[in-house]
Image (cartoon, rainbow, N blue to C red; front, side, top):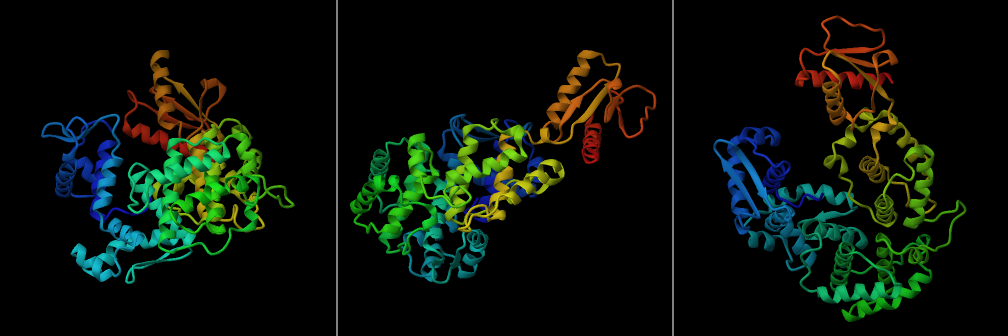
Amino acid sequence: MLPILDKNLQKEYALLSLLDSDERYFSCQELAEKLGLSERTIYKYLQNLTTQLSSYAPEELAIERSAALGIRLCRALWLSIHSVYTKLAQQSLTYDFFHNLFLETTDTTTAFCLAHFVSSASLYRTLSPMREALAAFSLTLDAADMRLDGEEMQIRYFYNNFYLQIYRGYAWPFPSISRQLVMNAIDDILGSLDAPMSISDRKHFSYWLAVIAHRLSLRHCLTKPLPAELGLDNEAYSTVLPAIQRFFQRLHLPATPPECQFVFYLLHAFPFGMNVQQRLFAAARDVRGFDCLPLTATDHFLAVFARYFPQWMGMGSPSFRLKLHRLHFHGALLSGSSDLLERYPFLKTYQQSYPAFAQRMAKLFASLAPHSCGRCFADERYLLPHYILLCSQYFDLAAGEPVIRLSLLTDYGPIYEEKIKKEIISRFRDDFHIKFALPHEGYDILITNLPVKIVTQGHSTLSLHAAFNQREWTLLARLLALAQQRG
């Protein structure tokens, strides 16, 4: 995510997210430990959040505090805490700065600082995290002159992400562009292609069109046609071109070929019916039999994927293919932000947790030779973490690891032993490929409560005294990790 919230607001929202993570009471000490803050700071942030939530009805969203029980968040099922994120974002100095930068309503940093009662040094410190995020979009910030430097296409891509992250398509932060006119243009474009589009996709596409229209109104234009390797000169483009031109004409904007091509290319990010799909992606292919368009790039990826993960073919839902398709869409033309390592710590540890999967994924990515245009499958920093994350969301990574056989030898009886097995599977199925076996069938780890020493060469034994306690769960996790390494 883009670091839009200022430092204190980030911590307040982190506190709110933690309270929302479980429907129970939290102690102030627990909240302080998990967030790395003092209890005094937690109380201060709770007061601020209570003020922020005062605009909601108590039955919709409220923080309940009890001296005996602790602190918990009461939230109606239909309400998302993202609405609070939107309110906090609108209060942040970072949002105000980039919103002014987009609208070009403030000429100088001095004028902005005077209007917000901050010093220029304080402003530069606040904007520091966003500078790093902008680098991922191949952009640089000239805060002194209130200017973003970089390719126009990348600036539009950044602002589309910026506003979507805050508003998710529900609000309309483009005062000079009519939302109804944009939605009518989308209907016109889709009508020319005879293609449906979901409500969420329409919201996403409407933000793109609004960003394009606003940038054009300020005379920030695309000057070069899109690369010929993208294969946009096809029947579908000829069909939809009049509708795209009408959109620009209604806003009294220049309908230049690069702008029309860019709008058409944006359609590639959204799913269509199969017949329209074939028309959209019909393009000249290179000698290897696939081109740079997202659909064919996805086909190529899945063909290589089938070689290394044949057991998963046919298991992923249609949305797995769609997410791959969107990933390739962004990678083919735009340089996107890749902050997944910060958002998903799993990506830093998956090589230790799933060594077999990590080795095959590395070989898979090495087999995806870059396209001759140099755009597809070339950005390991951006694509590889997304591939790994997608696989973790749709497939059981542990199932591809060596099987760890566990055996129970206790006097608990079959009913209680079955409960223990279910609890072990529940705790460790995401990290290890576990199967239970009888002692005489062979095992990697033996779990027993018998008061005798059982030692078998090449295997591990975990002795229980009564039932599993936290120490024994920790020991079992270590033994499973050792068994996985041996496997």
